[in-house]
Image 1 (cartoon, rainbow over the protein chains, first blue to last red):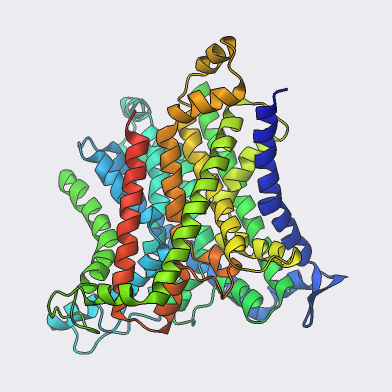
Image 2: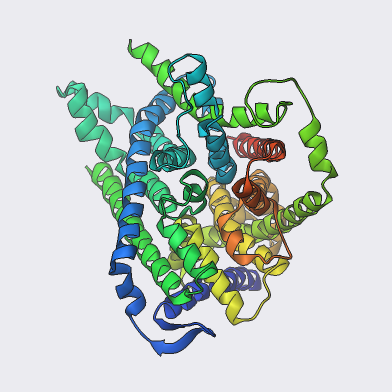
Length: 282
Length: 255
């Protein structure tokens, strides 16, 4: 066996073991230890950090986060699908530029983009200025620091994360399947529901995972746009770690999040496997 | 009707993407301190920024971390993608899955799990903890970027080189790196952007002695909006725009 291979594979494994696998194991262990005010944790096994997720305050936050992340994912999906479809099927010579214009916000700091949404929504922000100038309203609307503001911020921040996987998936879609369906007498609606949606399901799921997970954990969006009224899982973890110093509780919520992630990734893996197999073999 | 919808709908989405950003950029040149009303063009907020030594120091920290993290992450990502492409080894599927999982993993989970690790090994929070975290954050993205390019390489080239007596190391240096250079460059640029913009992971793994730009912006925005923030955000937006466009060009060239 050659040394180069050994060194390469060894370095990568070593890095990921130290900085990814071991930290996550430590997190899992911390989540079953007893919180201690003096030394952060005491080494006594307990499941109370998990059972406490189910008590009222936590459960409310959990449901709120699910609701917000779910609405955000749904809105992103509805907005993105036609958009990704139009861009992916476009014959325009500017197609790569059109795509670049989505890739740029994908990589741009979401903090800065959240701040930009603040500039739009605040009392002296552009929406109020325009509405006042047009005489539609007489007093500035309170747009910022509300649930809607948080939702708008999340949609704005995560929309590219939905568009790009959808785009990649729709672009690979073989137009022959659509033609075949139509030749066999399917109308546009049937073609869409029975052919296009199932074939782009991996893209839909990938986009949903990429939007749903961060939407639950972006602690600065609720802080900046919701005025701390709308607390999410991300804020809860941040609080447990940096304010109330209850590390085991924070770790338990993080483990819970990681498990949701694993479940979603598993669903994605299954769907992309099935879809590829099904149509290629037939 | 359909044709019109095909133009109007995407324009609406692009407007949604770029209007808020444009407002920030325009405000950064507006003389008016607190209102949106245009009171004339000014560079004042930018001069303020460049006279703020504290802020310049913070920017320097970000630059330092970004350059180092991007470079190390590119090296590790290259090795990872080459290994995944060329070799069969123990745990290859797991490594593949792990890289994918790390991209999807909520950043807050990475942040706190690293915080726990650093606490246990008693590494004081600051430069090193931040750098190691950023490298870990970037490696999966570099690996995926390079891997998407490496799969287009014909494996016969490696066979030919080996038949002619090249070792794996010289194949790596003389064939893989030059061949994949655009992808390496793209990976580096993406990592740099990622590191420069990261808020969540950094929030947990840096100490009070080592502040970086995104966290500085976060605390500035939380405390209240000053016009300098618009200027600072505009500069960062410009840098990101430049880096991402370069990365995309590098990835596109040979297709």
